[in-house]
Length: 158
Image 1 (cartoon, rainbow, N blue to C red):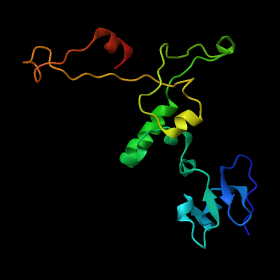
Image 2 (spheres, rainbow, N blue to C red; image 1 turned 180 degrees about the vertical axis):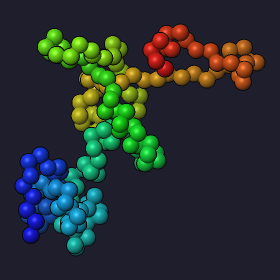
Image 3 (cartoon, rainbow, N blue to C red; image 1 turned 135 degrees about the horizontal axis):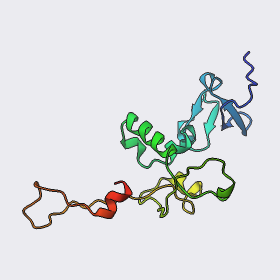
């Protein structure tokens, strides 16, 4: 018998199929359970069911669109970069003790979003800026010779 009663331990909600109730399971506990991702994956030995296939991911990983088409290191890199993203200014900005704050002045919703983006309400509080890139020929002869960049784009950090 294992009893895990640590404060702040990582748990996530799953559906207990025997009792048809929500059960919070921990990371050490899930090793001994048979958890189905979708209802079509349920077999006779299955004990629990995920509420959503994205619930086994972190918040930042579930916000990444088309993560199944990326390599695993790229997804981890994206999650680290999203944690460091700047977003909406704080409501109590004048009560902060630090003297340096970075914030975006013009924030945009991403062009491509995952389903978790709407569930978390990030449309009203976006956390980034869309990079706009045009690969065009200026005169028709300089495609391999030079790159023309907008000065305002360089000043923004792109």
